[in-house]
Image 1 (spheres, rainbow, N blue to C red):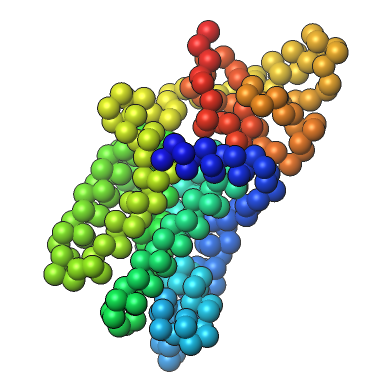
Image 2 (cartoon, helix red, strand yellow):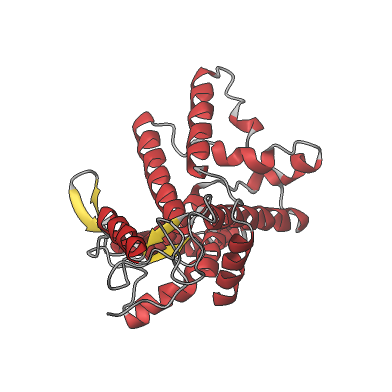
Length: 291
C-alpha cells in the first residue's frame, strides 16, 4: 500500500499539471443534466442507453464506459439533491487535501476496478443484464477516504443529529459487508462492494490501520490551521532573510516554491506543531514537526 502511495506521489510530482480540476463539479453537473433529461423522457429509455453493459460496449457503444457514473442515484428530488451535495462535499474536500492529481487517480482507479470486475463477469458467462454496476460504491469509497482523513469531524445526520464521521463510516462498512454476505446466493455478483473497499484500502489502508491500532489519524479535526497567520509568518521569514528569493509558500520537504512552480498547490499540515508548508506531493508524505 505504501509502495502505491509513493508511486502516486512520485507521478504527481513529475506531472504537476496532471488531473482534472473540480472533478466532482463535472460529475455532479452530469448527474443533474441526466436527471433533468430523465424527468422529460416519456419513453423511459434514456437510462437504458447509459447503463454499463459489457456486451453492448463490445458492439461499439463505448460511451457506456463513462455514462453510467452520471445515472442519478435516486428518483426522489430531495434524496437526489442531498446525495449530490454529499458527494460534492467529500469529493472537493479530498481534492483540496490531496491535490487534483491524486484525487483524479483515486476516483478513476475505483472506476476502472469496477469495470474490470464487470468485464471479468462478462467473460465468465454472466449476461450483461445482471451486471449492473453503478457509481454508488465508487462514490462511497470516497466517503471512506474522507472518514480516514477526518474521523473526528462531526456532521448533522438528517440535519439534526450531530455524529462523528468515523461512526457513519463504520455503519457504511457494516452495510457493505451485509450486501456481500446477504447476496451470497448471487455470487460473484455480490462482490461489487468489495471492489470499492479494495480501492480504498489500496490508497488509504496503511493509514487506516495506523489509526485503528495506534490511534494516529491523518489529522486532528480540533487542530485548525490559521492560514492568514501562516501566510503572515511565511512573509515575515522572507523579509528576515533578504537573500532568499521572494515567495509566499515553500515546501519543507522538496524546497519548491510557488514562485518557481506557480501551478503547484501548497498547504499547511495540521498535525505538525507550528506552521509548516508542504506541496501537494508531500502534504501526506512527510515526517511531522515536533517543536
